[in-house]
Image 1 (cartoon, rainbow, N blue to C red):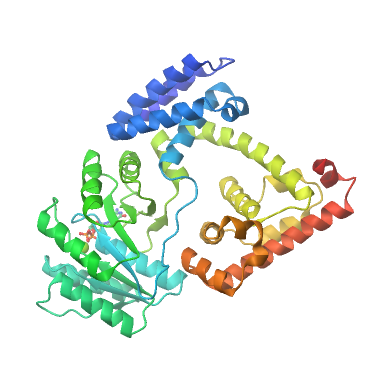
Image 2 (image 1 turned 45 degrees about the horizontal axis):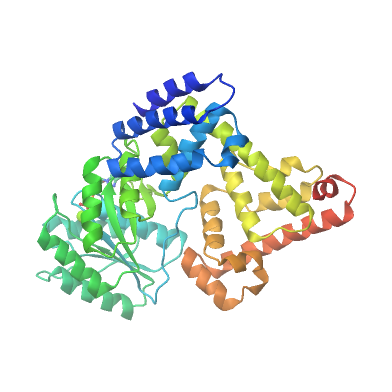
Length: 442
Ligand code: GDP
Ligand code: MG
């Protein structure tokens, strides 16, 4: 397995002082075979190897950590990069209501279940008014299934009218959602066990009529090479905007996830993690990269390497803060670090006597969910807005709220907390010119 291969590799590497280019090449050869064994598609493996080689020759990585850790870190970073980066790409609801979300995919991939999961998330956490409609005219029980799920999660369901075609239902759903003032309309479509032309053109026609802001390909993360063929076929015919991979709770090694993302270039936005309607996770590249690498020693090594890098970053940020600069990018980086370290740590630990700032961060009340939302808010801002939050007027906030799928109130709360923290840091650096903060500034 990939895990065994890498373990063996790192056993051989550990203990050596310096990692030569030859070592890197040899290590990457092993990684290449291992990825192929893990069912990652060949073109994806090739792409990965190019990336990894690039990273391996980057000077920053080379001097940051020890040789064996270095290779793990290179592979880990390469995987994360190919999985779309550390920042989860938020759900896009940035449309004149109703924002239409269309679900496409093979039969049994989890479209109907995932529709309900999304509906629950949007109505419960984001307080959106959600309607679901079943366009699955092929299986008699399909509409009934979605209706029951709608009742279960407490959202509206477009009444079933016998004899209508999928495109008729799409038009009717759009009309109803518009008239009744729904924020979001989720369209669940039919799927086949294999790709067929009739189904594809029907789906394409539905997309044309409903003009979805998000068109998701729902795919089973347990399917190996097939996953790539499916993703490619759907991507050719539909204006897909993202992937949702189901059965991530199974023993999927992540190979299919990596392949589908790489081949389509589409962001993986969510992972289905069980049969229950609550079992939907925002995609986390780090978790999946860890999974591809396997458990145990390797993950521990990665964490160690990441910590060393975190330490370096934290020192850099402490310097910045001591100069009284702390923008929203810095806050996002802080939040990310906290999530990685599972709590308040990192930079604050480097600064003596900063109980007040520490308390302010604690008050942000970081659970994984709020973390994701806060980072989503910050990533929905433009670069300029992150540097100069003062420019955030009402209309900018509305745009960001729509992009991040949150209420404006939440943005205000985040901004207020950021302002308090920035003020604290500034005050500290003024009053403490010869203390720890002052020293760091120098
Ligand atoms: P559809 O044909 O694409 O609409 O697929 P369904 O939503 O009907 O799901 C097919 C089966 O997969 C059902 O038994 C679901 O409970 C199950 N399922 C869907 N998503 C997940 C998931 O993330 N994890 C697990 N374990 N099962 C899932
Ligand atoms: Mg279905």
